[in-house]
Length: 286
Image (cartoon, rainbow, N blue to C red; front, top):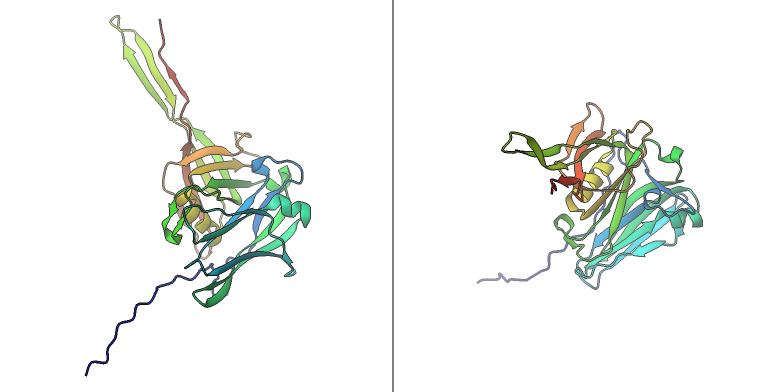
């Protein structure tokens, strides 16, 4: 007698954050620094936070909320995520300038709660310390600002034609331009050297101070892997160039990670190039 039967069930993936077990050392509990200016709208002075979650089916419910350090739930201030090519993606882009002007500087916590295929749960997306932008408060930091417009396989989210953007600020350094000038000359019949073309193929170095895994994941696994428009700012007093604000760049080399002994921190070194490569001159002798 055969009592076996076949039943088709749908495999679901529950949304998840990154909450660590306690092994006796400080982990990701440190709040991430975010800055905003109350009146000036320069992009490099005003950080954003993009939160994205994938549902399993249309009937699922996902709620993204923000609280202050006392646990009081606050209004979501910013822009709703729009994903025209992914009906199951949910997101919100928090505008820290609005929080500075509405609730003031301080610590904020972003949480995600969900009911997916009848399974309910919640997790903390992150904790953030909001300060007013100034030369002093930004000193020693660099910031990556990215726009996203492609399919992100690890989370199965299609950002194509979306409005999604995010920033990550950290203690570090960006700059040290290396022009890597490409030189093409030719020799005339009179054995005279004439210039054909010269082109500066600039590269720039991004270095972080020791950062937590929360920051390395955001940089390596989200921004560097997924960005379709990347802009970097630097606020170091010893930088040779003081005008590196929202510099449009493209990733040139894989990130190098230096893990520290007897410490959970890690340092990143990343090489970028100009997004627009137009530093070129041509021979135009009449």
